[in-house]
Amino acid sequence: MARAPRLFVKNACYHIVVRGNQGRPVFMDDVDYGYYLKLIHKYKLKYGCLIYGYCLMKNHVHILLEAPLGLKSMSSFMHGLNQSYAMMLNKKYNQVGHIWQNRYKNFVVLKDDYLINLVSYIEFNPLRANIVLRPEDYQWSSYSARALGKQNIILDELKLILL
Image 1 (cartoon, one colour):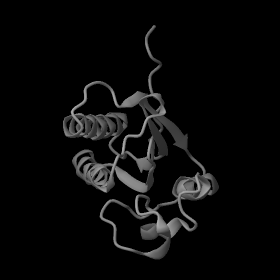
Image 2 (cartoon, one colour):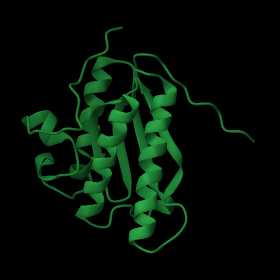
Image 3 (tube, one colour):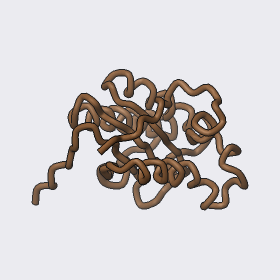
């Protein structure tokens, strides 16, 4: 049976979630996290995506993005990002096969109040998982840049959607 096509709404944001295959870790060390962030930057520039928030957890990733150029740019962004990362990870750790569980999930975000809550939900993931006591202590999320003004070349200025 064919997969259902992805829903794309112009001028909307998307909460993207991708998980490690069978819940396994996809980041083994700080170098892996850093490499994934470099890939986010590379592919956001290549496909014209805007990144409003992210959090890299040990076995999954959250990204809040907008794709002004359409569904193809979001799909190409995610394909390039996750394929490039999987190739590096498999080579680095001398393994083969899928590292991602299924294809990424994307959820349409339309309302301003939900958008603000979603950014907090994404960035507070490490706090809820008891990894850190304060969100600014987790270096693999956009919290420090968005909330504390630290420089971050990945993060774009959050524009509220007016309906």
